[in-house]
Length: 136
Image (cartoon, rainbow, N blue to C red; front, side, top):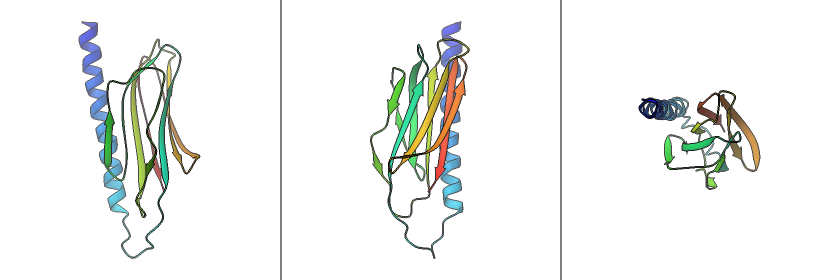
């Protein structure tokens, strides 16, 4: 019964992750400015850090609604490869799921742009789902 409950919760968290990415995509499109400058590219890295005893399961990350899903993850830390955004990109999004060791477990996700921490999101509990979005 407990295994089935966790499976259902993980599926629900995956839906939340995809919804977060979709909202990021929609908001990036709604603020397009075709008359403005082309902008510049950025080096972006997404990171996740979970408390001791927790296990990171899955991450969805991307720039301007181009999501990448990383599954079958394990451990207390995760980092995406460095992504170079296209000039004029609007936003970066990340959402990560993890299973906590207990009710006081935590999960922190971060968005690093050009070597600088720009945005952070947190979650706490046994079932962890944290997300963050950054607008360039």
